[in-house]
Structure formats: structure tokens, C-alpha cells
Picture 1: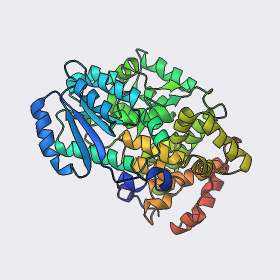
Picture 2: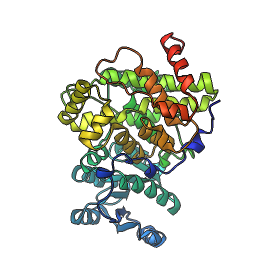
Picture 3: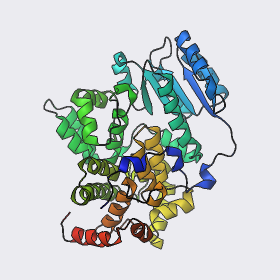
Picture 4: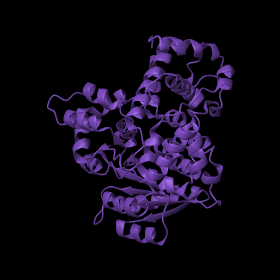
Length: 429
């Protein structure tokens, strides 16, 4: 029987898996410390931060500014890897500062410190910010946040793609999903069930809602793994406010990457999500992990969308070579781009603060053995579900990723895979 100790199997630090197949592009050229800028107009609080974080000086190159204008001067001298700013400041506020950072230095990770009373301001900078921290924020929480972000940064140093990924305000959706959610959030009869049903089918919108719900700002006190739970916790009113204040989604511009099979990838992701959930429900009897598998399945190929949206023509050539040579896409990506959609997707989810097991699954869904466990894990389930879905007809523009036979034997599921494949062919999933 497959173990249900998924959380234990997956609870590892992000730096151990993002970029491990990308040594040439992702390992820093030197041992330079990560540059961090903290901006807050409360002088006493800033002084306490300086004292409390002095022990981290060997790891981080820490700078402090009392207002937006001073911060811009420091940023103008040399860009920062991370900028953390208070929301409410006299003169230039946090949103205005981060808007400048996004425009001039998109690779920088942007974090807001905000109190609950600043909800309207938070709504207005959802697209500008990778993570929100509730103010007052303990030094321990601040250090944990910085550790998680800087660790994953240090292992993904592909500058062009890093800037494109960190510079994303949101992820494009299919036009029909865009219209459905826009209509839903503006309806007087809008419900969390309806929003969750629409959002759960869309990788970009799912990722955005998980980013927001996992923000320390909302203080749910635990990691949120499923879109349904995220929508239930946030509530209709907050989601409506978010959707009206700033786009949670946008329509994909097919002109950027004319050969990108967007609808097929959406369909594939939804089917992988359903398969992952089905495997847990039918064969492992763990409803909670089944919902985590669904979310992971929806998100597993999100890096393809990022690459198509940010690299356009270059990624179109990658897709073309994959089709013409019958080579799995991630192998061509590695050859041509020195990274893969798995790593790119994991990087975005990591800097957005999503739970580590989801980040790890996206990073390792082609290589689940990298999770370092002899037992099944979430990445293994999505790897199997991905391969199972690719055994089905109907995706001529996507070169299938095959299952890792050695991995199946190692976790004693080689016979199960054939059984599951037949069940899928017979319509039993």
C-alpha cells in the first residue's frame, strides 16, 4: 500500500530541488551575498530590525531606508535581489515604490508589509507583490520569508527567465475562463462554490488564489493547498474586491507564441489533476492528499505558460523542435534554454510563497526520484498521472512524457501502472 506520509516526504527546503538540472545557468557565478532592502518610515522599528538581523549579515547584504525616496536612491546605485517595504508611508507609498521596482528591475522579489486596516491598499498591489507579510511582523517570520526566497533565488540564476518570471503580475487564462470568472465575481448571486469551480480548472487563476490565501497577511495560520479551500477562506467579498481592484488573470496573447497549444495544455492539466486525485481516492484512501494532488496537477505545467508568454518566438522554436524530433518538450527546453518548464514554474510558485510540497511537485514531476524518498510522494503521483494522461489520444501537438520505469520499480508500482492505464482506457477513472 502506498504510504500517506506525504507531508513528511515532501517537507524539504526549496533550494534542494529548484535548478538542480540546470547547473550551468542556475549556480551563482560567485559567493556574493543576497542584497536585501527593507523600507519603513517608523524609525524605531527600522532600528530594531537592524539590530535583530545583524546576525544575518554574513548571508545577506542588508540595507535600510526610511522612505521611498531614499530607497530609490539606493536602488539606483545597485539593484537589490529582494525589496521589503511598508505599505503606508508619507510621500511615496509601498505600492508606488514596488511599481518602480517592477518596471526597472523585474527580477527583484517584491514583498509588502501591511496591517489589516490597509486592505484596500493591498488589493491595489496584488499584481505588484510576490508576498504579503502582516504588520507587525516578527523577526522570525521575516527571516523565514527571506530564507525561503533567497534560497530559491540562489539556485535559479537564469537571468532572462528569472526577470521574466518575477516580473509577471498574473498568469494568462483561456478567454472562456476569463469571461466566466469576470461574470461570476460581478454577479449579485456569486458564491464561493461557483468561483472555486471555475478557478480550479485554470492553472493561472489557481496559482494566484493560492498565492493570496497563503499570504501571512490574511493570517490563516496554516498552508493552503487546494483552490476550493482558498476560495472558502478568502470569501466572495475579498475575491470580488481583488478582481475589481486589479486583474487576477488576463487573456493569453496567442501572437506571442503562435504555436503554443494553450487549450490542449489546459485540458491536459485538468485531466492530470483529476487522475492524481483519483489515484489517492481510489487506491490510497486519503481525501486530504487527494485535493493536494488535484492542485498539484493543475499547476504542474504552469512553467510552459510562463515561457510561452515571456519568450514568445524563442519558445515557439522549442515547441517546433520537440514536435519534429519527437523529443519530450522538457528535454528540448533543457538543451535550448538551459532550464525547463518544471523549474520555471517551481520558481514562480516558490517566490509567490506557495507550500513547499506543491513547489517541489512542480519542480520534480519529470524526475520524482529527486524528492529523495523511497516511498511515493506527491511528485511521484503527478509524474504517474502525467504519464497516464499522455497514453490517451487527443494531443497531437504535445510530445508525450513517458513514465520512469526504474522509478516505478523502485516504489513497487510497476504493475499498478499498467492496471491504472487499462482502467483509464476503459473509462473507470
